[in-house]
Amino acid sequence: MASSLPAPINPKFPLSRLDDDFIEYYNKYLAIKPATHNINVEELKANPQKYASPWARDFSYEPFVNDIQLKSDDGHEFTTRLYRPDPRTSPFGEGPYPIHVNFHEHLFGKGHDDAWAAIQWVHEHGPEIGARPDSISIGGISAGGHISAVCQQLARDAGIDLKLAVIAVPATVTGDGKPDAADSPFPSAVENEFAPCLSWQRLEFFRNIYEPKSEEVKQELNARPVFIRKPLEGNLRGVCDTYIATADCDPLRDEGEEYGQRLVKAGVKVTTRRYTGVPHPFMHMLHIKKGQLYISDICTALKAVHGA
Image (cartoon, rainbow, N blue to C red; front, side):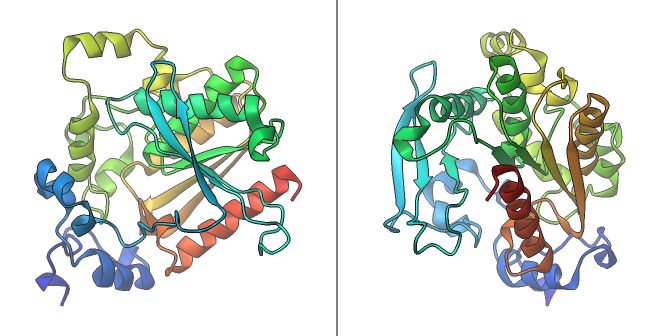
């Protein structure tokens, strides 16, 4: 069956490393669509729903969901989504509840600015939306994990005390100019070169899209602190407590775990968990056990630091 699917698991990747429920999920929901890195970007833009992942759901109709508009320092206006259910009826009581930032996907660095602007706004205006400025955590997955690693360093520099940074499957040395997996200093790049969901080829596809092309933009980015591009190389002393989640079958696994090790050396309280048998975006897959485990772990960590 799998070989007849549009995007089967690469035969070069050993199935024995993957959990059975992930393989079943992948073949049922993901392999039925062609991999987007093999499709023209204009086609993707023209037909986003055709290629959307099954976990992309719209919650905007819920009465407790509200959108507000915020601005970055450059004047760019972006949407920030608030989730504020009635604690008297919500199964999660007083929360904590998330605030989602619809940050720039490109150019590289603009998404960081949007996320940082949102953190500062919540810190300054929290009571306006029922949030406590002294009880803020941040987090993100993949590119969002990278941005969260950057923002925890920005927050430290700005004197904003964060409770926790949840950094999941992050790239921490983005754009190192190594097009071949064998040139990466991290063994997971070769070990998971042909992994499902995020292969090295797919990773390079994303990098080629968001990397700056013009010399002007390159110079602008290079003028910024190095940790904006490579949080792994930043000064990590004094940043907030951190939960790092990595996936065993992910090319980015080792650089995420290396970030955790450097945090420990800097005296930061860190929990790092590697989720075995699953690839890069497993936490979105709530039908599989490791996806459910991730959600349980994150909720437990957040409740602990927020006294919920």
